[in-house]
Length: 174
Image (cartoon, rainbow, N blue to C red; front, side, top):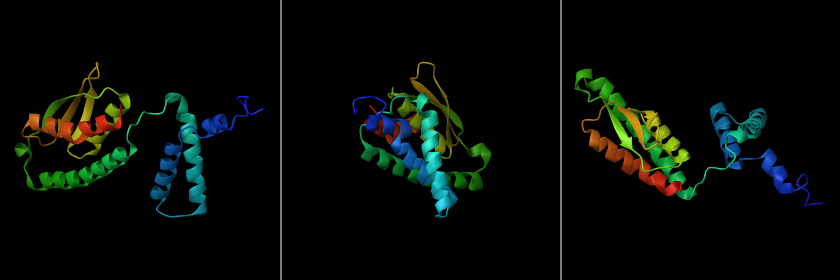
């Protein structure tokens, strides 16, 4: 009887918990957004953590491939740090520099990444970091158009994004 697909415990878990890590992240984020610990909040978080992955599972039938979870967590810490530092830098630019002294420019970031998940994470990282916004991915997926609030040297801005983010993402995603 355990051989029947409808009674296999793995298919039951796969159907009701298709992305367990996403469920955990959603419950954690919900509790952090509530900023209080309550049974009702936890129940609502669990409901959201179960319903959202089930509702969106058809959009991503395969789990995103991740080679190194430890490196992924260190990447998240790096991005969090960069967001804090960039906030201070952008505040300083806005408060103490005249607009005509800013080196606002568009840069094209050539991509070595090929995984759609990795490119999405890179584009999101660039956008989350104050002072930069990823605006467009080329049709062939080989370059990303980025707007920089203050980039005196476009080539240096590209080198920093590639070294700081893309190189690490190449280690995380296959």
